[in-house]
Image (cartoon, rainbow, N blue to C red; front, side, top):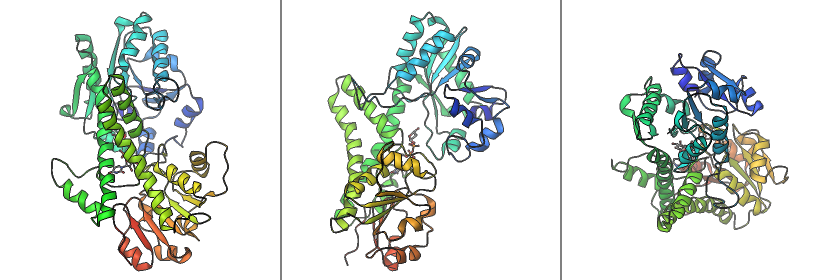
Length: 442
Ligand code: UDX
């Protein structure tokens, strides 16, 4: 929304939320999310044509276009528990709009939602006498965290789905004209509502599937002596495959991939397509296996006993350049190692100690075996293992000779992101392993 305000000074953008604390943060110098470039965008537009407020009713009443960007977490209860999206916030917004709106509106679904959610919104509006005045569009967001601002400035595509009626098409055109202020027209794709809704889930499922595919190959590489980065490079040169999203890792995390695939799986089950459901579910299963495999490789290297050994975990965010930890592989890895009675010391440049503790242990739970270090050197001191879990750039430039000296021997490095120079580390004296790379035999 902030980027729309930045790119269109004549459009007034009001971000409204019931959460007072959140709105106060958006109005302060410390924004509630860390995202490179976002501070500058907000600083430029805030107070000019970008406003943050708790006046939800006023925001709805005065808007021509309402973007709905509420949370759609995985439902944890009742029918579809663990898979289906919990749509209560979407429903609440639809009811609120129905209650407050006095004129025509274009309602834009921005949240990632299951296919046919727009039906729910339309149904609630119609049942409350708002049928004729409202148009519902789907405009899924494809930005990735860490590069969100750049992605919004120059998106691969903008997708807008609307009803195939003259009113629906007019609404699609209105929204397209907002994006057209900075996005070339040929990048603005218009579809019917269901195609737009489904495309978001399928895009994330395809991306995640590539990671699970290369991660499955990483296990085979470790067994055979092939190098997964070489394989990825070789296959990525085929223009039909392409080089992106082929980086083997400890497993994908983030707020979208797992959630959206499980959502897709639930949809397939609901529509009587168990084979399709099983196909996509295997992407998540492979990811779970990859995360577990990383922890168990560490334990087996430690002569099958991590008990009372110190393990330094470098990185906690689900990827670099973000403080987001949702579904990060680091949570599973820390829990696995704590279950093995290891002392786990985490360092992340952007994630706070309190949050790391809460994510691993749960709110209010204590475990003295989990500690958080101020810097990587403190984390490594006395450790048997140094495990790189997030690919922060700063981990590439550390003084590994100094780290080696301070660690217990043999000193092991597990590079869960393949960002370190393993031969160099071995020359220093480390026993170093990557993902999808065989450790040279001694
Ligand atoms: C993703 C989609 O990319 C974006 O289009 C969508 O709108 C939201 O979900 P995001 O979750 O921010 O974005 O991050 P992304 O860069 O896609 O990475 C997701 C996870 O996959 C991270 O944990 C990342 O480390 C991992 N990953 C990514 C790999 O392990 N290997 C890769 O090659 C790429």
